[in-house]
Length: 388
Image 1: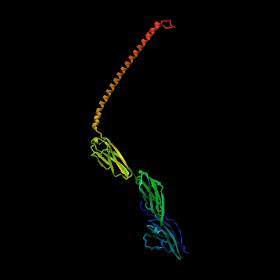
Image 2: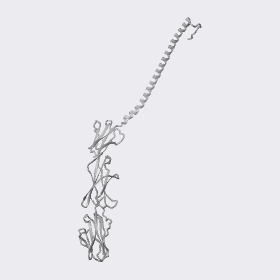
Image 3: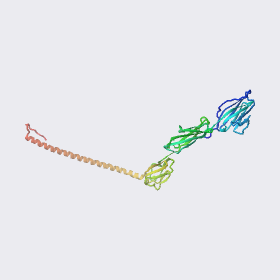
Image 4: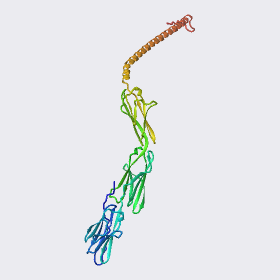
């Protein structure tokens, strides 16, 4: 944001007049407000001026100009105009010690003067933002914002993601200036790492709509994460596979370890930092590969299962498939035929057994009928015939 732009404040008018008795001469002054480092104009207006002596003095009552002639060797004060109507001097690079009452004196039979009051404001410098302690995900961060010098006391505000945060401000007056501080606290997560928090300072010494801002980049520490990316989806015998372990974490893990289950890495493997290169792949390289990373906040591990594609084995397996299908169909047909034959035999045996049973039953009935015919029965005279 840089140093405040120098400018001249609008004049706050306070008119006063002094007149010599019987002469009608008058002198009038205007109060002036200026920002530190800016330019101020101090004006004495003369009415019915007759050529009397006019003297302008600083707050220490040192004479700056005597009837238009420089009296004090301070090049910051320049006489801009000396006429029967007004005397105007210009002060550049205004300082706090320049503040006070400037005397416009008109010497007639009696000495009369009026005072033009100069007020110097101090614009805030760029705020200084500091963190109390290292921020860790899941915890709170406390930021402080300090403006060591301003007049009047600067108003401090916090912003995050274009939203204002509620801070706690305090101030201390040091002579003519104020030292102002503000603190703010909020919870943070890993997604907040790299986020921007702004402390803004404003007071009347700055042009309307302007402010001094300092941006603070959040540094949130968190445990690592890991994920393995393969250079190709399908790997064949003889191919070269490159595995990359994508790691995040703050602080960033500076060491990454590669392993293959309970086995050692293939002799041809080249592990350099985040990458593992496996040239001339073979089925013996199959297995579960892992990358591990750690920082002081935690540990992360990622897995990759390697299966090397063997074109020869696939062709052999594809060739053997039709014979297996035909064999299966034949076996099914033989099983069905056997089932049909067994069913037919069972039905035949079942029918024969039923016939013999009925035949035996018929013979029993025939014997009973014959006995009834020969012996007769009490109460029955007629002849009964039985047909079998």
